[in-house]
Length: 142
Image 1: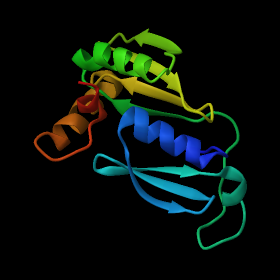
Image 2: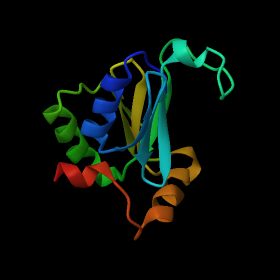
Image 3: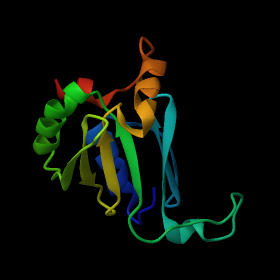
Image 4: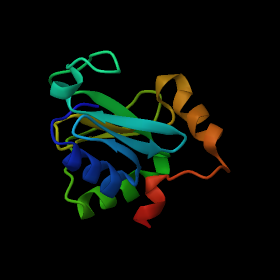
């Protein structure tokens, strides 16, 4: 995800979603642990400069999703309210479940999606981490 204030993005994703800092690469990059994956936060202006990694960058709001269990939606609503994060939209899906949409400090759209969407892909993602240590943020809301 891209945003010019990496410190604000780091605070947001760590405080609200329970992600853990892996490393900071100056003002260019912050890497956060997200379960068995990584969320990379980039300053788009600095990533357009030549360096070891090929240049890249994006302008405007990006979008990505975290998968949550459908029965966790109410707890997430409460958790977001405690962190003063407004729910921008809630969408009910034909295949079941609903997504909550919020904005990060850079204006990126963050979706909390049910496991039923994308042909049930979310269910297989959740099942792949069952019983393994993760930092599922919902546990921090209880």
